Length: 238
Image 1 (cartoon, rainbow, N blue to C red):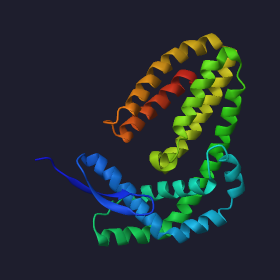
Image 2: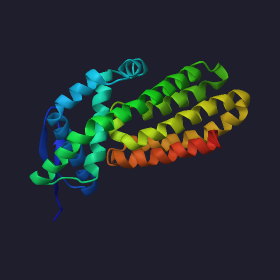
Image 3: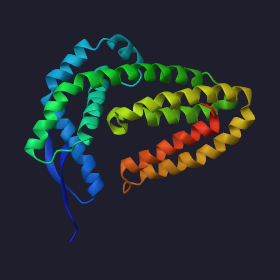
């Protein structure tokens, strides 16, 4: 007999109960579903954030190449709800009500703090991509690798997918890219050798992405190891 785990599934404007065979996958689905239910319940708080966030102009400018600023705020709020939910996942009404009270107090300050981090991260991203796109033809493969790296980090829904805590590491990843660009210009031969090494591992990650049998959280765990390897390979001492 195959064990079945039930979970709340996020359907955008509502949630529904579903059955999932993989226990870890069921937990991930359930956490997102609970986050969505809380977000729908706290819609007035999210509306307040979208109107009153103190640094919205800078956030709007920095997110212009990624999409809509209100969608980013929603994503950041979902990521902050995830951090709250994962500490005490509810499986009944009373547990959910306690969690809802906690979210009522913590959602706005947590999301504000995360958005402040995102302003810095997104400004750094824009600077890195501008430098990468300005690289000469001899470093075209490096430019493409950096763009591919950023595309993975800043994919749609990246805040919730990777979690509020992980966003702080993005500063290290982007600073390492800055250092890589500097060193590549000074020593393009060494950059080419290192690029061959990293490309093999990027191909492995892409094969994991394409394999639908592998849960996304496992793909992401591999990618974080890849990011740390990038730092050691291209920006030692970063």
